[in-house]
Image 1 (cartoon, rainbow, N blue to C red):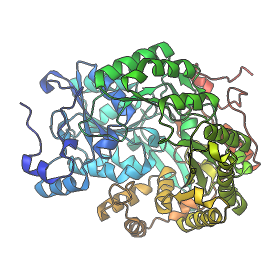
Image 2: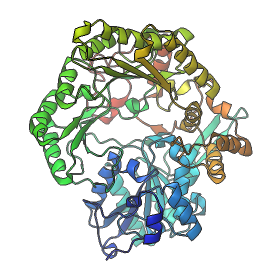
Image 3: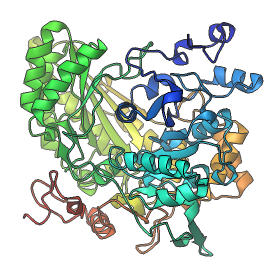
Length: 621
């Protein structure tokens, strides 16, 4: 019988002990003596968040299809258990076997959000693995990172042995086979890393040296090992239909953030929003075969018992077979009380018709993401959405019976003026006005327009990677300016406005575009007590301020300045396919508020065609 790593007394003293006991439906158990490689797959946040992540489910399934690999899961212990583990000297353990992570061959950490960086250090320390890769012994696990944040891995460079750049289904088998071969030959840790560096898509940070100019900018970034390439090419799965997909995803014991079957219908996006990193790094767009998706839906619902299925995509409305798939799901599952979630839809007649079939209109709300209040700003960010589109969608929604609308915006975008900011409130008031144009006897009570502002974060590999950020105080001033404008609107009782934490935004931006020197700040913040920084109740801006002060790192260098056209970026050694020339051209078009057409309408020569295939129109126009 499997022995739990935590005794009953500890489990009864902590919040949600089911986070740590494993043995869920569809979790995979193997005999550890019959496998060659043990891989601990980590999501550096609490169980409920990590269990909602599709990428880990895919890799967990893919690795465990191999007879020679046992992949297990590990998540960040919440603060109550963290305290006990440190006090009692209990090492962090995997859910399936309950064995200490330090006994594994690999610790793979998916990095989805910059504000989880201190949690990564928590995972390493509780696992009793040295924080710095240079201090690890031959028997310590190989620590590998993946996910969207590794498109600039430099702030975490000292803490990882390897980074996997791109989509995990491509060369992981080659990496694992290389590890087996090296171990059989008695190779050292360094010798394995050298062999790994020869695999396309694998980045070994210790094999590169960064040098800086007197003004703090990056002077050079070059390999110091003959096995390391000058450029690391991202990995892309071109045939997403025939790649692996988890037909038996693990079913959590407690309610996860997204407690449902997730059906990934396509990868990539043709829209070209200039603030959106995902839209650039996941090019070209690749859709899954609709017949296969229908089979997946039926099989996964049967194997999990979930009562909801969600379509996953950056822009679901752009999936070519969306109508066929959605109508199939409605016909097949509605009588079985299966809810259908349709995120990322444009609000048009088809979408509203579909949502009316799968949602309780009285309870549900519709979501628009104009991102900016004025048309000029929507052109700057290349949103491809006009006020006419927004008003038309709102009218159709209200006529269809909806009374609740959520509108998402960004503040602090490049070239933004006070008039642009005020237009957020004006646009929302116009949407409310559309509702009150409906005859009173045909309305469903009062309408509620809820607007939310996040603050702009410039990300690597976007046209806005050159852009400055605001200070936290300036972001907050802009939010108050917008809030005051909401209070002045005619239909203010129907309007509600809120905004995100500006201090968190500034930190996110620093780490998103930071270099190796930021690693010192992350480590110091962790030592001071920073943990679960993405959780409002845990975030300590005062400790982060102290960390910057203690390390002598100036925040303003990473936030307030506009990057020079020719500045060398810490992430420039990564080849995403989308060229720097294209991104710079898009930056210049943004400064002139010029719209770049959707890829389907006209090819702008971004460079993604080098991967061959997918929905890519390069050279065809």
